[in-house]
Amino acid sequence: MPLSLQQLQAIQSDAMADDLDIDLEKMSLWTEEEATAYFESGGQQEPLRMKPPPELSPVPKEELKKWFPRTLDAQLNPVYQQPPTFRMVCFHAAGCAESMWSGNGLRQPNPNPFVAHCKAAGGEMLACELPGRELRRSEARSQTYAPYVEQLYPVLAPLLVDGTPYVMCAHSMGTWFMYELMKKLAATGVPLPKQCIISGFPPPDIPMKDRTWNKNRGMNDEEFKAELRGWNVNEVALVPNNFKMYSPMFRDDFTLFDEYTFSPLPDGIKDGFPVPFQVYYMIDDKRVKKEHVEGWKRFTSSTCDVYEAPGHHLAFFDIPARAEYMKSAVSRLPAF
Image (tube, rainbow, N blue to C red; front, side, top):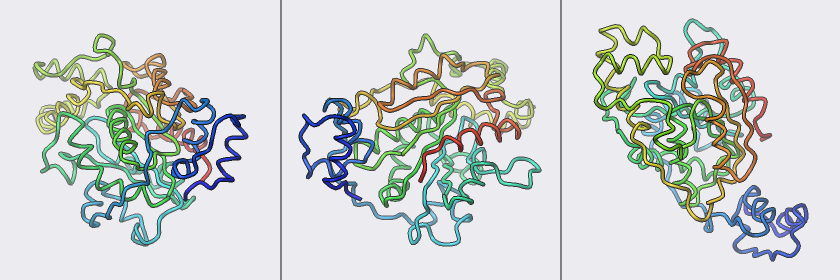
């Protein structure tokens, strides 16, 4: 819904920014967060989105389910007819699939805390699955993020302009995918999330020399196995038959961040996304420590709170550790 003059005046008053003029035609198209950031910055932080959300046609259900395999199974009504109260849009780690967010876990009868919260509060989980894995194993993978952003945008963006608030959640490799996608959303007028939940990875501007991992290109199999162990990949994936099957996916996924070249935020949001961040590091992570994730503060003009979570880098496959992390994140979600 467009912001009214009364809403803008209230935000202006709270920020004690009576010296700034209100341009109703322009500012009515902003979100409350964008208007707040503008007035609190003394007019210096004007959002990139200066136009109405784009007119986007919903994609066929088959295409939606390809990218979000479980979402339609969880809905009693088609998502376009009855939007949920909120959405959680989730991006998986390297070598993983959407089930790290949506699955119960091995031999677990009950849904994980994210899914349980969505069901209890009328929300919808949109756990993204990239090509080249699970039901999409026959599709080509990419070694750069850009093709994934261009492919996912026309599928996801129509959902994000229907007025339903949403949060984005990303772990490890998925955090840089989320960053690139959010730049695309901001540049095209699609409303940004109400919050981002980020875990297990440094910000995308980390210099090559400071990256705490080794590039996989040129590694032989044994060297690559050692690199995978540094990320706490389960030994089951490294036995000969499994490694032969999964190593191409691991290599492609690792190349996404191994060879990633950072591109900064657009000028309109150069001080950061006007989105609160809750950021986590795993206490037993061998590669990503607290000091690494703290750099995400540079990418938000809102709050950025850093928390410790139990387990190692792939704690999502440790059911108690995942549950503790997810419960903590749920407790810090905005009210919808």
